[in-house]
Length: 347
Image 1 (cartoon, one colour):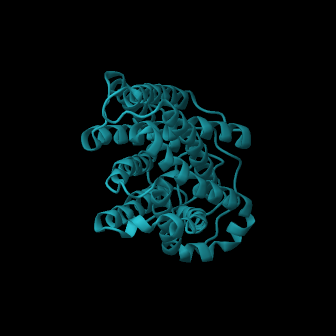
Image 2 (cartoon, rainbow, N blue to C red; image 1 turned 135 degrees about the horizontal axis):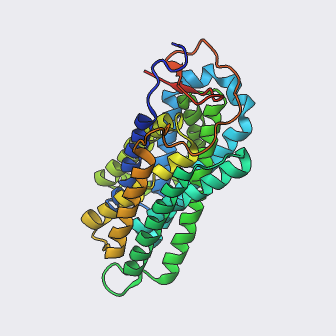
C-alpha cells in the first residue's frame, strides 16, 4: 500500500544496520570458499552471484512486471548494472584466490567507496559531506594498513606464503572488483531514485547479471557436485550472502546514498580478516589489527547520530524525481530530505 511521506519510513540508522548486516554476511564468503578447495574461483563466483541473482529476480518478479515501464525507460542503467554484476564475482573471488582471503577482500571492498564517490561526483554532480570524507579517510586508512599487513604476511617465507606476482595480480583484480561493485551499487541506487522499488531494481539488475554468469557453470562448476561439502558451500554462498545479503543491501540502499552504503561495507574486509585468522589460519600482524580498529572508527563516524545531523548521507539531495505510482503494494515513500522523493519498500 502507499501512504504519505514518512509513514512507515525506517530511520537511516536502521538502513545503515541493514547494510552492515549484509557486510557481515559478505565477509563470510572468502572463508566459506576455502571449505571447498577443489572448486575454482570462477565456479564459486558464478554459483554465488549467478544463482543468488536469479533467485532475487524470481522473488521480485511481481514487482518487476508491475514496474516494467520504468525499467524500460532506464534500460541503459539496468544493462550497465547487470554487466558490472557479471564482472564482479570472477574478479573478486580470483583476487582472494591469488592474494589471500583478507587481502583480496580488503582491496576489493576498500577501493569501492572511492570509486563510488568519483562516480557520484562526476555523473550526478553530488557534493560529499565532511562527515563522509572523515569516515572514508578513517576506513580507507584502515584498509591500507590491513592490506599491507596481510600482503607482507602472505609473501613472506613459511606456510601459506604466496609469490609476489600472485599477490600483485590479486590486488589488480581486487581493484577491478571494487570498481564493478561501485558501478552496480550506483546503478541500483539510481534506479531506486527514479521511482523503482529496491526489490524491482535489485531483482532486475542481479537477475540479468545472474543470467550472464550461468554459462560459466557448465564449464567450471563440475567440482561443486563432487561432494556434499562442496555443494553445501555453493548453496550457502547463493542463499545467504548473495541472496539475503543483497536483499538487505538493497533495502538500505533505498535510504542512504551509494557512496555511504559502499563505505559502510568496509566492515566486510574486517570480518573477512578476522575469520581468515580464526578459521583459515592466515596471520594478521599488529598493523592489520590497527587497520581493523580504524575501520570500526569509520563505521562509528558514519552510523552514530550526532546532534543536528540527519544521518550518514553522502551527498546533497538530487533534483526532484517523477511522482511514484499509487498502485504498488508493499511500497511506501520514505522520509527524504526536501526535494528528494524516493520509492522504497516497506512492511
